Amino acid sequence: MKIRHHGLLGVHRYYRTKRARKFLKGKVLDVGCSDGALLSLYSNIVGIDTDRDKLEIAKKFGEVKEGSVLKIPFPDNSFDTVTCLSVLFSIDNRELAYKELARVSKQRIIISDIIKKLKPIDKLSDFDYIKKIPVFEKFLLIHKEYLPSSKLIKYKGTHLNNEKHMEKISKKWYFIIYRLLRPIMIGYFLLRGKITKDTIFLVYDKKD
Image 1 (cartoon, one colour):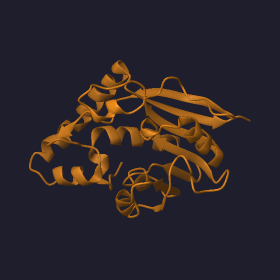
Image 2 (image 1 turned 90 degrees about the vertical axis):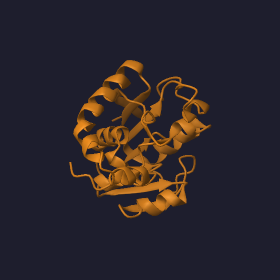
Image 3 (image 1 turned 30 degrees about the vertical axis):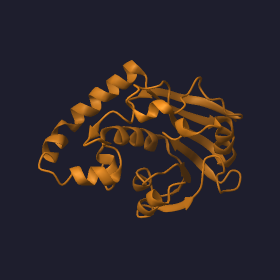
């Protein structure tokens, strides 16, 4: 896979986004698109986010619009697939978020979420985490797997996930070593994710 988005050079975002891409179909809405990693991999996709600075980066890779998972700015059944990756842990009203995702989806919903609190040193420990598998009215769970946490590797105090920081490291001499070790790192953290079960990845399809 050709990587155009620097954020995908990070181990965790690369794997999470690659898994989501496998299940995309039709017209897609990426809720919480951040700086556009998923947009860079799929052509028929729209992204929304509340962070205007991230949207400025994301619009280089596709169509974007300001909006929240609690109030998605599109009519009912606007998209074949709706994704919401590593967003819900920061949302207080999960039930409303679930209803909004289901409202705009014609057929498929893809989410990833934190399933347990991480170590206190991690800022994610202050956020909520999933207590039980979400239930979407009129949707059936068709796929479930565990992924590594998206917040495990740091470089100079910052997580190696987004485009800005991966662009910086890609200009360093040791980036060559990083690229050589990257496949091993992906395998290791994927295994760690399954053992510690930090993050869950779920795919739902609408009932016939």
